[in-house]
Image (tube, rainbow, N blue to C red; front, side):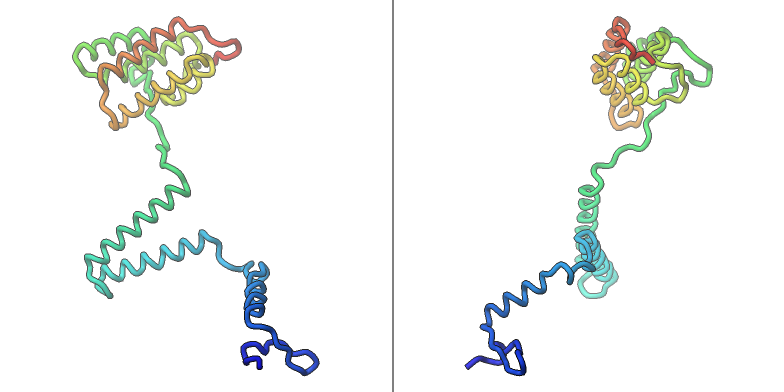
Length: 219
């Protein structure tokens, strides 16, 4: 005799029994219908809700509601790390929005590439590698301007100079980009220059002096 759980359907007033397993499968299939879930929150919304709930719980714990303040602080730090990891995964690694201006002209007006090279050599002789690298990079860019491979433009950044010069000298585009990164890292204080960094820029400057621009690539 069928149980109450098996008596699920009615046809013309008479009960129709359906075995329990098929009935459960039919109900599950019906609930999987996309029509029932079109207003469900997205995966991102569910993740954000979960993070918000855990942040609230952690803050409550820190304030003394529930667990100890130390435990709450640990929970808060864990949640903060999870949020940071989620943002990193979603948005990618942060990048510097701005780069250092080369300041080739300075307050005293334009200077020649030879003057900057002399400054670089003087700083290098004194072991002041940061200053030597900055002066050498300015010498390199000013020399490209003097050869009209770059247009004369105050306020240009190292990245911009490398990108534009790479169009005229495509064989040296990678070296120019590396030089710009070195200049930026040293100018931002993220890296301390050394003799090797100065020598690389000096050699690149000499190489570019002999380089011929690609046809149609000059600025």
